[in-house]
Amino acid sequence: MGDTNPALLVAQITDIHIGFDPDAGEDEFNYLRFLQVRDHILAHEVQPDVLILSGDLADGGDPNSYARLRNAVKDLPFPVYPMTGNHDTRSVLVKTFPGFENEDGFVQYAIELDGLRILCLDSLDQGRHGGAFCEKRAAWVTRELTSHPDTPTMIFLHHPPIVAGIDWMDPKASEPWYKRFHATVSGHKNIVGIQTGHLHRPVFSQVEGIPISVTPAVAPAVTLDLRPVDTDVADERGIVDSEPPFYSLHRWHGGSLVTHMQPVGDWKTLARYGDNLKPMMKGLLAERM
Image 1 (cartoon, rainbow, N blue to C red):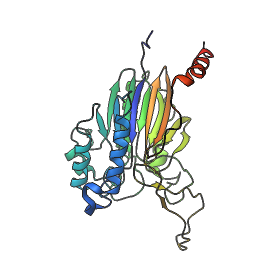
Image 2 (image 1 turned 90 degrees about the horizontal axis):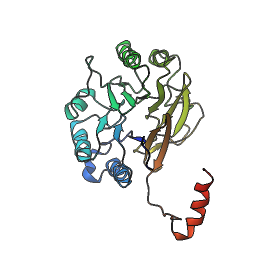
Image 3 (image 1 turned 180 degrees about the vertical axis):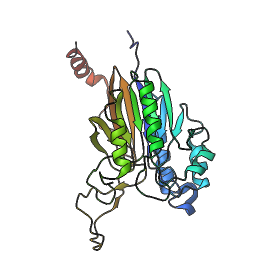
Image 4 (image 1 turned 90 degrees about the vertical axis):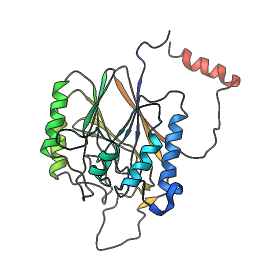
């Protein structure tokens, strides 16, 4: 018998940074990495229900980069939802992807799926690297959470409201936006997970007891270095590494949220499920009976 309650799949691509090399055209490094990720998702037999682009879509927030992104996703067989990051220009993004602004002018909206809600938040503070979460944005989130108290809800925002230990990328826990976000989500039992980007690394933590995951970037990775930064001493540490691009698949099924993070690259498959592996597979599945 088939599963009468199939899983919901939410794909997440983040930190694309199209336009970092504006003179490269269709051969731009970040753009080609995005196409690799897009095509890797499309190659799955089980397709996502939605795709969320969680910020830093265009490196300089320019119209041409958003237009290229729009053209690259316009024929996908599932809905695509754009979000803002610190590299984005809100006014330009919404001209290219209209319909995602709320009444306060922020790119904040709810996605209604079968038995699951997704709240996409706007953490952009234009002209600033770090995040923002003002009283208007917080009030919107509170209204959305309290109006659907029994519906499992995922929250997406670009900036992780955590201190991960990568000094030059982290917020301070004392920043007003950080404290306001923590206070806003605290005590809401319907939040099943928080998904972010920005750090260009895979990171897992908790916010007020809620699991949070950071999906790695399409653009190159931030180097993992947990030493403090001295702004007066350039110590030649690595800042950016040429790790492969990533995406996430968030799987909601049976009241549980599971996140898969997938790198995309050119490597060999070392084993396939052929007749020689049927005894192993039967034994594995028999153990679950």
